[in-house]
Image (cartoon, rainbow, N blue to C red; front, side):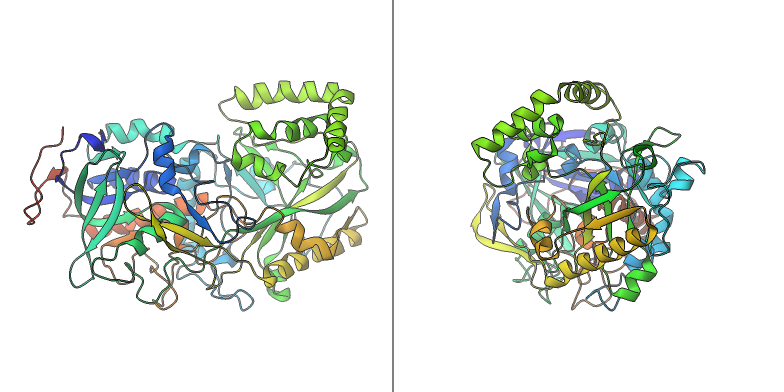
Length: 573
């Protein structure tokens, strides 16, 4: 059943086995799985099916330095389906090394192992519509698949790993019907959880306070609560809930909001490959099941450990779009159309102040490259705009076998990188966020070490040469600040409450019936985009909750008044 929160009478109290706050990929995956296990689930979603400016404005806040981090309302969509409404669909699992304690990565080590999460990855892959859980090129593409670069062999740098791409799947659109038809699920749209109320002993959730922008207020009393509101909003809700614990829920040791990570990313250097164009596979390939896949370069886990490197990958990429010297009409067209592209995808096209001469050179590129431009537009229309499974991104024919390396690196967690509350409130009276994202010199040094290994191996192979300006590396990696919408680590998982917020079961250490789903719990960030792993963690959490609550499940949702006289019982329409 799907309800509109503003139609629920003021003072109503809703009850369910589990209340999931947040209708993005984590919340939807969790809800579907819990419902299949016979538990009643109330899924609260702030947004609706379509984007709404007033609802999106609830994400407003401030950042310490906008050059380093985008405003909090960017890269996040407050609507049903969450940011899956705009994601690119890139899927890949974390690596076994990501779960290990590494001396060169501070605060590393998950309280669970890769093998603990591995059983949940295939189902996560299916939910994301990324095909089979197969992330090696030979296995996914077949033993006869051509290598990334013919003739390049290395014991230190792997080219066998690949990424798989979702449709990309908008989880709200894709799974709305299943949620609506599930007898034990109620999805409530336009419902903003504004406070977590603890019992007086601060060891369990008593109720959740819910408000709408239309002024409706009601409560939820579940047996278990799961926050699935993303890396920023989860910390905000925990910190803002101060009725019993002045420091916020689960924050006795001032950990909530700290250790905030994104990824370190950018296009770097020049890779010249001395092979024919046919001997380099820099674009997308389709698996036998029709899934778009892409290869990448990665320093092996043993070399990472030996050299003290954070986990990172690199992809073969074209030159900087903003520089017209690439002579590509397609890239110049993208640059000139950047103001028509959403913020999330245009930010990296707004690189400095373009002069009249720069614009003229971009126009010249378009005029002198009409065939490639027309072919690209036709391909984009048929394989991207009109296709159900969309071509993932712009990939162009490379006439020279010269590339940059698109780096995507793990960020080392640090205590001082954090999100916190500021002194302003939103339309619902909740304190807004202040984001103080920080990177370290160790992040840059690690990427430098990774690139040096790759350069050495290219040189040794005799098939390629990679050069980059070492003194410009930090600028190249931080040209656009923290990478996109990967908000990680603000309610991190661990065994020690002094340095973590939740345990291996994603339960808040000090609150026995409060759990967190999503990338907020990641202790480290890996080289990988977070979606597939947060889905796997959500499915594992569903098993944990089903095990704890089994045999005692309430098979339907009900309304009941709390003892406080201001509440009254009311039937849900």
